[in-house]
Length: 138
Image (cartoon, rainbow, N blue to C red; front, side, top):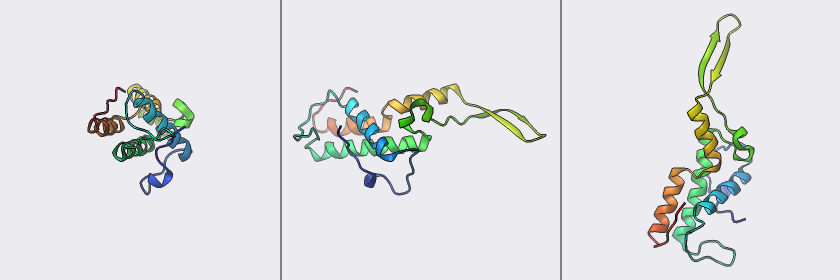
């Protein structure tokens, strides 16, 4: 499995949910899946030789991990690793009890974010390979 970014590539202060190394692997797998039909020169290990494409892969992985962090997603836990949040559905004053109802749409979006490359990461990859006359059909 190729991994396109390291912990050192992540922005300072970024605190992903769960295992950061696993997230880098998962994000790298999403990048590979998105670029599976792209044509570009690689080294003997399968990494892009073109520096701009290699950088785009790294930035896409970092962007994906940052998005998971912002959404409170731990992709290693699958859909169960998404924190859904929600709106107050009921409350009571005596004993201060609250219950929350997650938006179905928000829950679905977070679940999809576990296994789908973010639009920003996809755009970064598209832009990098388009300038190199390489085609991606994610």
